[in-house]
Length: 271
Image 1 (spheres, one colour):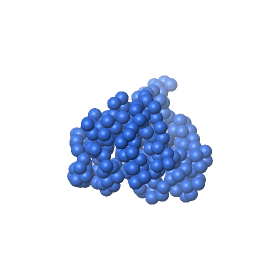
Image 2 (cartoon, helix red, strand yellow; image 1 turned 180 degrees about the horizontal axis):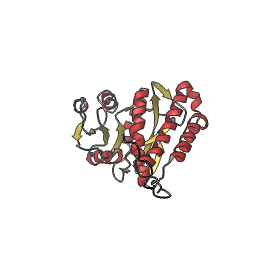
Image 3 (cartoon, one colour; image 1 turned 90 degrees about the vertical axis):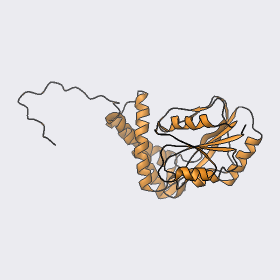
């Protein structure tokens, strides 16, 4: 039985996947579940020794990661996104843990993310400990469309002081805005399904709070001008999330008119 399985889900990640897979070349097996890439992602994955499964649909991040997890055979699993990679120090520590693992213990990896080319060390982005290294038995991902979570009932520990999980989160502002639009839609659907309500007031309130939390409370101002840009980006993401719950996900039903319009009311303009 393999000791360590690395699982990665992809779609059109040819520009970043090789870096990710090279950083885990020490793993016993690498599994890539792809959802219809057209840019050479599958070929790159196979060139790096990965087992590739291609799916015809996109069920969301959580469900897709569970598909990858179901293919893993190792006693331990390391879950990565295609835009993440282990630095040398963290790779060595992961290999050491897998070689002599404590029982029923999952590990949070310290993640350092970049935004528009700058490593962000404040604003709530660092230290960003993410639960990614875990025993295969007894673990699964939540079914959230975005911001999925690893569901694990055992003990957890932090791998601080042993390198970083590096993350090229959003390389450009165009990428950031595109990701914000896609993720806010998925998150709005998840929240609406749980009964969360949207609305203009809620959208404004959540957006303002996201800016204050990022820029002031979490000291995003220490990251300089891009710290401010990130705070605004977070505010916009929260704002649109709650607008979409209201306007696209049925999170706030329309109010009935107080009285029916009279028969001699002017017709609405055509478009």
